[in-house]
Image (cartoon, rainbow over all chains, first blue to last red; front, top):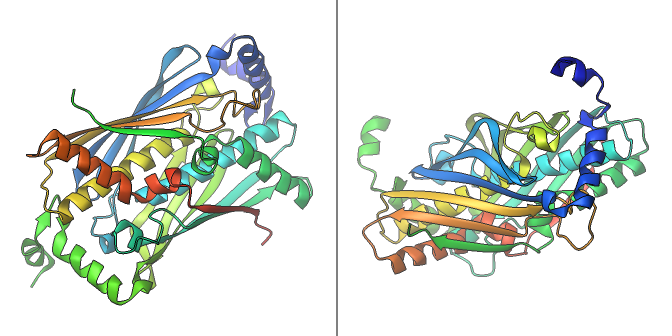
Length: 193
Length: 193
């Protein structure tokens, strides 16, 4: 049987192979070690506000896995912020991480609960006062003051059910929880190797 | 005078036009409205774990600015997590946002304090237990348990001064503070427009 024909027999909901999803959950219940993941990236400063990230592999299900190809990401600042606009800036990258994660969480948890989703479009915005970054004010937060996510969901369910789906998306999104649940510890060290 | 010759007269430290940086600080002290920025992105779900972000413009210094071109970012999950690996996954994007921001903060604040940096290389990793995302355990955090950033800095300063520079980078990084200072509020709503 080829991969192509195997694929035909997969039960896909929202593009997610739900039987595999349930099999994964069962396997993890048997052996929680499978659930322990380590994600990692490397970054190289180029010049000014421009730096470059490479994402090659990750650890999970007891082994290291290579991505199909290394993913390359550029960050820079626009000219107004003294950069050369070679890529989205870090705070824009953060909005992307946030919305992509909540979206996938909506899609996967929708699939797991049998909700067929036809489309999701979203916009995200955040307010940032540069006086924080520039050290001009000690009372202005350095980070975003508020982040707002707005989701349009196309599915044959009520608005209330769509709102429940967004809540489910937030509840189970690793990025959303890293940013807003305040349970993540952090270490930033000089690498003397 | 052409842009090229104007450029020659800019005093660059770490690729940052420090005179412009100080002029910006002075302008903001005069009129804090200049410091109010709004960053925004849009996202389109494609299929399964794959979704696509577009970054076009932002608001700051009292007007909307277009990026030199729209930046396009893809997020997906690897096959192990039931995706097709069309891009870094959301939690990898988060590590990128974090390290790109701390790096730029090191570079800009280094420039402002006259520290010439020849190179920065970093690696970042985070531990994530999938039992949170899958709703298998109520005690396992949904987000990263710990994130670790390691910086190699090439500059003619002592290791202690490099450590101070990393601390400065963390202190003034908007992404670092959004994730770890716990001062950002969030709203996620159904867009009924």
